Length: 523
Image (cartoon, rainbow, N blue to C red; front, side):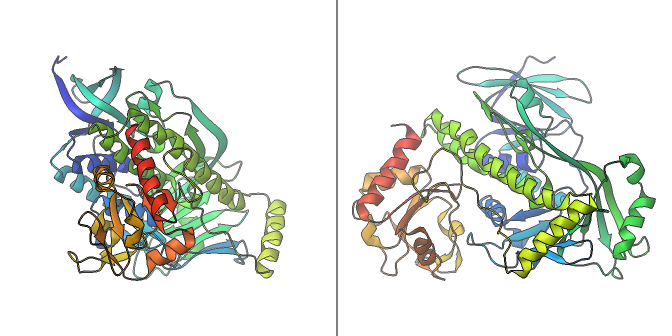
């Protein structure tokens, strides 16, 4: 055993997409990151397939525009359709419209391609040391650091590493979570599903729709699987043997109902997944944090599993940055658990609610469901849109705080080309409807906000004469519409796109800014 100790800023256990995204974000900020995984290499077959506009915005913040990676991501411009056994539409959710965050509402992707891009960007920072075949074990922590042991699973060699923080992105069976004795709240909601990924050939005429088939004889999901792929998910019935169903002969039989055959398609992957719902009761233990599947699990009906892990990374990375720079109080890191755990429970509840519609193998119960939903549809009842959950208690204020901000297209004098706001100004901003709202903001307050990752911006055409406030042109009146929606004339947007709070006049703007500074810095 080597006695050598290597000092880094952050160790990340788990080199899946959540761990890689966190390493990329922190590496881009200049921190020394060591990321390791006990697997021998990246998993090269599909897994997660869908994300929403918020996740597109997270990729944007990391310098990765999903519309510029067509090999991995594709936009979805249609309805999300739920039908019964007779293919009668029970309800539809409109996924064809742009989202107020400046991206499309829904994208489908191939996870191997997405991870390849993440891996390349992560390594290109020059600040990330990455190791496969390496097991990360927590050894201990004190007020200044956390110590881990890295074990080469091939040779058995170990080395000690001291870091300022350990982040566990090591899956639902997380060793990091177990090392901190964090309890796991299992809701007992689970179903086994057969998941099949297909590459359709040119003669395979499969539906382009994202489709849920609520057929009690075989509840089925059919969705895009990223560019050039389709995914089928078949629920196992109560008395079925998973091993008997999960073989290619049976799978082709199930797919034949969709005119998908061995002569017109290629089966890329098939496996049995257990759809579960659970979350960790605490996401922080001193200098140790957990994220992604290590912190929560949910069924895939809302497409929010991996997406939620990426939200974890986005929430934690800017707070860690401020604490590591000595700009923020350590107490800021406690808001990671309080904010994200409530948000994730809302997403899990939504996923379970969708699952309760389709996961009905009893024909009588399914007939009652169909009758009620068809009656609602005939009466003009619209399906509720996907939720935009609010953060749990933490760093936000008032009626508008804790919700996602909007992102519009803007130009500036220095940047005359039309671009999304975050690409021009960065994600954190105090956005003012007009320059007069900055009258009570002194230069020191603006400077402090900027140091905390929040620039001050005015979106009125006249702009501001102050050098420390940037005037942007609201190209599509997006921010004018947002302020009308908020019932405010100013909003402070945190570096993770969530609203800290809003204001209606210059005095309230100054108060809002001071509150943010005080609560972040603890001073």
